[in-house]
Length: 234
Image (cartoon, rainbow, N blue to C red; front, side, top):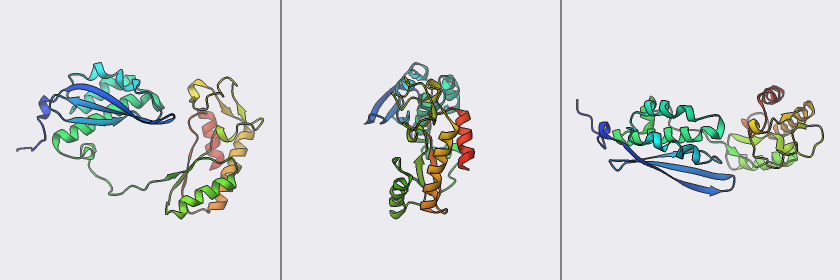
């Protein structure tokens, strides 16, 4: 059987890895491109806010590899990934490998992962935070008015700053609100849980019970606080 390809997959080799950063400050996306000896390239994203170094340190382990061997290469670099943004390098490279393999065989990347499951994906509308839940609900209502049927908001420690007795946190780490939990050991007290639960209750009451609302806590808090907050919100 003859298979039509856009390259010679068995002879494909990775020759370079380069990156560009789109955006600025906390809202920046490091994009990477993997180059090959046959002129086709693959694109991946390290993910927002992460350092492109997580991907660049993998370059020496990628050169000379066949990008069509996605699983083999992934297992070779998997040990250098971790949770959250620290896994962005490995994930971005895997994304680029899938893109490359799809181009090499002339098929969409999703065909390499079992084929297409759906034709459309519902998107959600994120909403920047307001300390006052009624003002937050009004802001989220504008998303509904624009036709969005799925919303998202933040319910985390930024809503608790300045409210005494709601957080257990070293003042030294509070200077940078974007530090993740492994470096902060931040916990939410019972008073904090109750405050956030009431905040969410008011918003749900204002918007009604029919529209789905997703919640992001921004990764600042530990597993114990996440479980307690999740149960309280439920």
